[in-house]
Image (cartoon, rainbow over all chains, first blue to last red; front, side, top):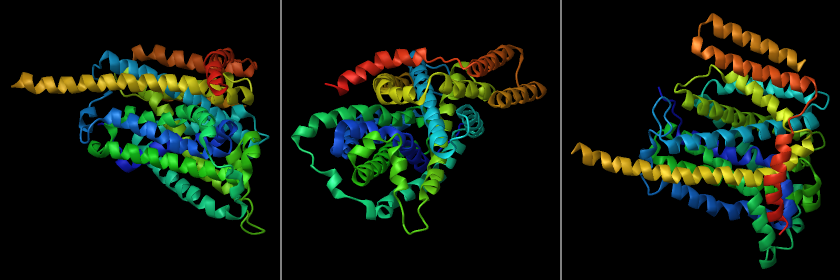
Length: 367
Length: 72
């Protein structure tokens, strides 16, 4: 039986794709390029994504035609196979990038004496356990943890009220800052573009009728939360610290001191955020397994443990050190991500047209 | 230590998958291929070898393109 997820779960999943990995170190490069006006980046990129979502879904109430897309065991078209291959590479690169980012973060901030190989193996075992349960379980776990993260992020401005300095946001944006902001939007595009993973699970959404609204809401939620984090990063830390800190959001959270004895809230907040990132990486593992299953013509978890462990080790082997990982995330990933995501969207638009033509031809044949 | 955990996990995986007869004869080759890949990766990590030539290539090609856009 096909696994189903609700629209609310889809909203939280999409917001997770946009926000959970991006808050680790993306503010650093965005602020480096866009300076004090970098907080405008999520607002500027949102209309682009809105337009692409409208292009993908088409007119209201037409989402039902995606019901049988990417079905395992069914003979798919060449376009479908091409999209699945592109999704496989996209998920592979993001899996390796995010798992290494998570491991590096834990190794440098939380457990400095633990070797990263050990952290990677333990994380991969957790990811295998979650992703083997399927998309329904991943979506449920994600909904619980992401809801808590939303509350935490919405409370951050109040917790940091005593540290806010509006002067850090000045001078205000003008026409001169347009060029720098465009570059920042380019940098963030591939990261926010990870929301296109919804294409792969669109057939699992129930009811499919409201999927377009759910995708737009999820994108808006993810972008809004990222906007809050960016504004706080710049206004509390200032552009100089954000540009030079490896983990600016963690430094930001460390600034919370409510009273003399409540000044280590960073650990509490990190323990809320890490499960959300685990959900994202588990979803990526599910996606990779889904791509294998599609070509294997059977929905199977048989090969998942060794594949996950191999990819986990690749996240260590592909990057000699954390600097190489940061260079990949900040520069190589921008162009590579835009290329892969762009190809997926373009091929999907062709596929949508093909499905529509096939549906129009069917009633004519039957009559 | 991490290598020991991975090898132990793989052993448990193989025992479960063969005892429960989850895989047929055709699928055996895939199971062994993926296990060999994992073991190979653990050996590479144990020998402190790196596969960063892939990342270097990506950083030089796609990374350079991004840097060009950012430095305009």
